[in-house]
Length: 106
Image (tube, rainbow, N blue to C red; front, side, top):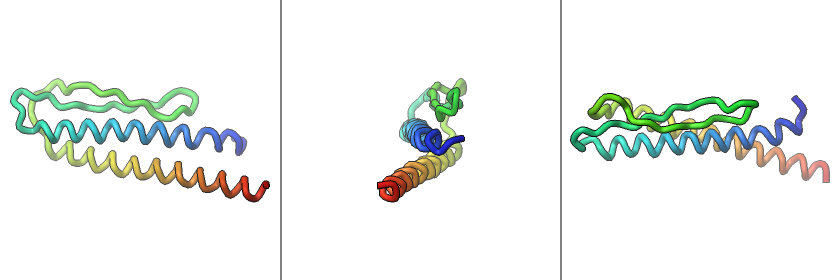
C-alpha cells in the first residue's frame, strides 16, 4: 500500500472508530441510567466493517429481553472508552507524522 493511501485511510478509519465507540458509550450510559425503569429493554450496538477499508459503522437496536444487565453494560462502557482512546491515539499519531513529513519536505 502506498504511503499516500495510508495517509488518507488512517484518519478515516480512526474517525469512524471514534464515532462508533461514541455510540457505544451513549448506549451503555443510556442502559445504566434506565436500570430502575420498569419493562426497560436495553440498547445494543452492532459494529460492522465498512467496505474498501472505510472503517467501521455502528447501528443501535433494542435487546429482545427485558431487564438490567449492569455487569455487561459496565464492561461495554469500559471497552468503548478504551477503544475510543486507541482510535484517538491513531488519529493524533497520524497528525503528528503528517506534520513531520511536511516539515521535512518543506
